Length: 291
Image (tube, rainbow, N blue to C red; front, side, top):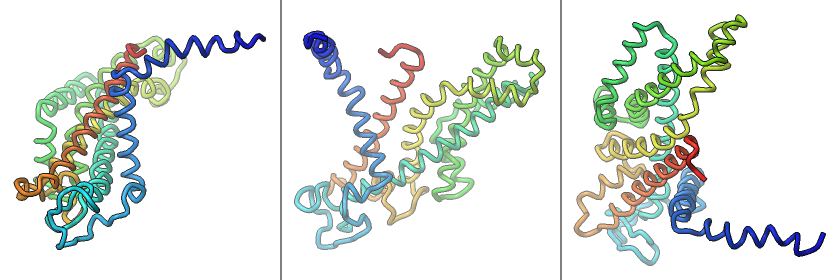
């Protein structure tokens, strides 16, 4: 084959495709959020790779030290390194969000399937319950659950999950109605397959399509909720490094040490924004609108 023929596809790709990959929309809408989420995941899994400073090590001589020198993000009122606490705090905040989202997805799928496959009276009862719970703000509902169960990481996870379950259940219920009346499900019934086999083999796999999109966006909401509950003193207790708890500790030092609240606040904001961008991207792909 002539060399020019081999180079043809490369020449066609470089002028047309590469500029599209380097546009601001792609860089800020896909590459930057993905890179930041990878960084957050690394902070959760292996924070020691990002900082070697102990987040609990107090140094009174450097209390409220501004950013710079040995403390890139400054030091808090006890002299603890803010950068180290932000990095290690990702493990608490993200882990709570992931656990709560996983529990909410599981509960929502089970309740949504139960409603969609149940007799009409039970379906209507569950549907009205989902509607009522969905009208309440998730953080308020989670706060109500924590007020009853008490503070603690486990109770915060349960509270956030219970607040998010109705959102997933409503979507799964609607999907179940569509799938249960589809042709392939009717054909499976004609062949004599049991209801459990039809649910496991046909209904469940075909109702889970929207879940990755909802779970990605819901994870951002769960991170906000966990940080909010920790801000109110209901999550991981001091001296544990957690983004919401760090904001709570920084309230009394905003005038003299703005950095103590700024960096955990930025971490929460960027994480939620990037998760939302990723969720919207998945939604566009799911709906067939992404190039």
